[in-house]
Amino acid sequence: MEREALIQLIKEEKLIAIMRGVYGDDAVRTAEALVKGGIRLMEVPFDQSMGENQENTLNAIRRITSELGADVHAGAGTVMTPDQVKWASDAGSEYMITPNMDPDVIHKTRELGRVMISGALTPSEIADAWKYGSDFVKVFPAGSMGSSYIKAVRAPLKHIPLMAVGGVDENNLQEFLQAGVSGFGIGGNLVNRDWIEACEFEKLTALAKLYRERLEEALN
Image (cartoon, rainbow, N blue to C red; front, side, top):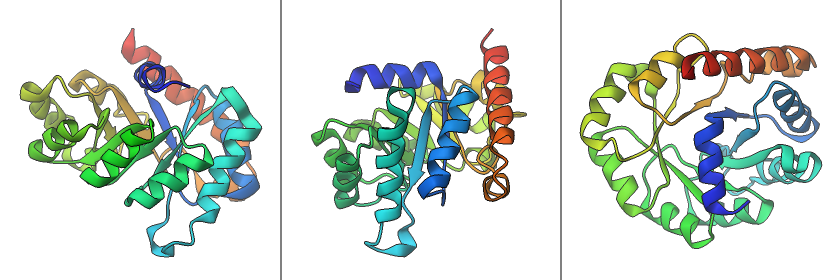
């Protein structure tokens, strides 16, 4: 998908499922379950503790992209170096998500024509991420700061599309929307590792549907 079209899709879909530590067949089955529940955006994070041995993350992105096709749009998460941007892009990642604000990572992502979602927390970091070329700015950890923080930050920075990540669930999603965020990244509160290990993928589908329903209720 073209960059501008993907930016618009993210604004419309709003929900990105964070599949941390989910690889191989489990990654494909998890993605399939989430798609059935109405979630099409998936983030597969790098595990930085593994150094350059990141093939499990890249393989998960390749498989999700090739086996689910147009039903899903996969991105790489916890991207922290320009090399990881290149590896993820080559594997089929359509967007890069970082936990921090790194101009080199932002520039490499834009150079390769991918969508950039840079992590930030303070107003200065948020403004800098936007200045350097981030398409969205991920406020992390949003749950710890609360929706009132988002609302306060957006007062002077409402031209910057913010995403709430960390501590967001189906119960506080509406208040973050009311604070003005453009979307969400949902990790363990949605992608339940115990269910995946037990092959209870129908539970993931049901929970994804609940998130989608809560989102629609909040928007209407």
